[in-house]
Amino acid sequence: MANDFPGLRPGEAAPAFSLAAANSDGTVSLADLQGRPFLIGLFRGLHCPFCRRQLRQFSALQPVLREAGVETLAVINTPIERARLYLQFQPTPVTVLCDPECRTHRDFGLPLAGFAPADSTQEPQWPLHTSFEQFAAARINPGGELAEPAQPMKANELLNAKDGFELHDIDRSISESFGTQLVGHFLVDRSGCIAWVEVEARDGPDGLGTFPTAERIIAAAREVAISAAK
Image 1 (spheres, rainbow, N blue to C red):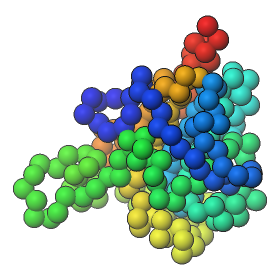
Image 2 (image 1 turned 180 degrees about the vertical axis):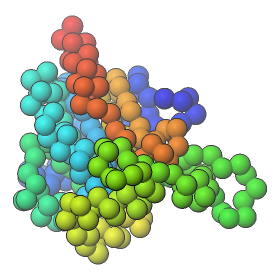
Image 3 (image 1 turned 60 degrees about the vertical axis):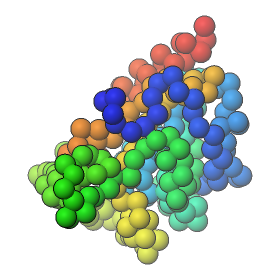
Image 4 (image 1 turned 180 degrees about the horizontal axis):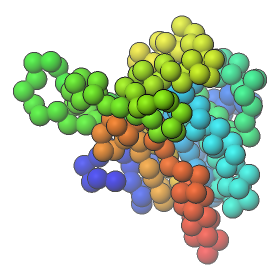
């Protein structure tokens, strides 16, 4: 990761969190996970089709990661009632935590991409001070599901239609507030320190929706698990 790109880095302590679980009772906190390695994916809300796909990837990976001694958590910025409704139809063995305000994302240093004012004389810089023109010019198709690369917001629209995912008012509200929230994957070792991290779109908006592969996650998790066993 570029040194000037936001986000916590390997060797730094994972920030404390305590979040309501959408598919179990009560809350899950950093303290609850003390002494155990875990993978935490901090996603946008369920309105984001790329994040839903990554949650499915997490579901497939969870047995492998658990066998390696690594717990798997997903944090979504969807209210718990809406998340619970979705998970009735799309259950997952992954612990899904809800953070509608993206406080945990901010604590992990994940940026909410922001646009510079139209009259700004500052040179655009992704992701905190980008230009609307740079974002509008981006084209993505990370999973190859679209007929051709599309502007990120259009890609969301096309994939939601493909999935038959109907946005409710709460989804639209979350998307308006946090639609440019970047996604991050963090592996935390048993001491509570970050051992591995990947943040979405670090090189620009053309990387939106591109997340680490299953093979990359498994390799990193096994390395953390081996270190934990020593």
